[in-house]
Image (cartoon, rainbow, N blue to C red):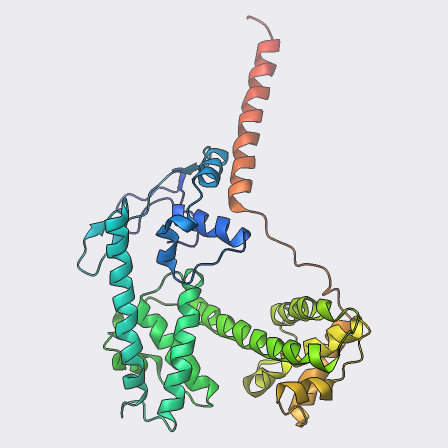
Length: 344
């Protein structure tokens, strides 16, 4: 899978950006399923019949036929063999290979965390955390540009170590997974995307924990069912706007969703205080820096337009198609003008 339409493959020797872009079938399929709130756990789930909507895929291909060329997915295995997922046998083959890679790394992650090379204080706890993160990152593999699964495992370990208050050289982590750092093609953007994926999950966990108890703590409270989506929107806005300084986020990131719940409750005029949310979630919010995070989120919620949904950047495909149509209109206008002049 790819993150965007491409003009040529990575190994093409005669790249030409003037060519019509190549349409990624799996990217389109992913978008169709996400729009229907039908989520896949792994990228290769998209080969399964339950994720295939031939009618919508054909309609999408026809809609953008002027700016994209159709393509078919092809799987490249570790030995350089190309596999076309054209029937159940080859789909099962691809999925089996990917599942075995994942299972191998699930066994390797605890070994890496307990290795003397990393020398971690709580290797078992970090390994448990890393396995959880590994699963989460694989669910969002498309956000990481489909990096080598071993790099994803290394991201999971690095993030688990970081969230336990330590840091280790990323190249060293790769080596504990028997992966040469020279073959690592990840970028800082991939690392940021991985961190965001984990942060989103952890914030959601805290909000879910509160909402589960809130329905018992505040029975028959009007507007309580609106609290979660509103707090979630505020959380995304605070992250997008970088409301809380990084030095505070380092140790108090977990306070942000709590602050968002309180701010959203105030907006809905619900009788829910900061101390109540901390108590129900079991989080200590009494520290000075925790209160600083809470204050910044509260101030942002009062003085910004976070209730407005974020502006969605126009689709590159739509823009390309509009440009194509405008070009045709310009050509037709010129031809009409020339025609109106009559014969010489």
